[in-house]
Image (tube, rainbow, N blue to C red):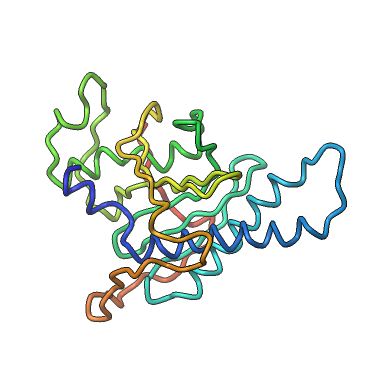
Length: 223
């Protein structure tokens, strides 16, 4: 994989924290399920899993403020979701369910918001056009700096297995720029994080902008 793409991927500690949050959410659901009476339609299970995974991912991020990651809650129609923001590198992370046997998501408007500028961000990093576009058509935008051209990552977990993937969608959402199995970063059964390279405090910037409310978050879209 191109090193410049790797530089946009999750850092080891970020990956470990998100994986731990997913695991904690799944563990809570297993605990609750033992107390619930069996229902005929069983519709509550997938919704509860989604809610608890989001809750515990948010909790573990907020419990580790030194990573300089923020969590926002947003809605797409009636669909609530969380967005994790790496404020230092301007990278947005979605945490979503995707069955292990399903390669990619269906196209959606809200996921498009987090993939539209991915190519522009990589072009800005110096990756040649021919390596990104192949036979695709791409609408170019001006080089506006990383503060206006965020990179979007999706962390995909399966509801029935422990497998977790990390990837970045192409702007057309037809394929992935990269998709990596990151399950090995955590031992799901033993609740042990793999020893990771944490941020050095000397590397952490302190000049963060004031936290914005959900409605104030601006994501650059192409016309």
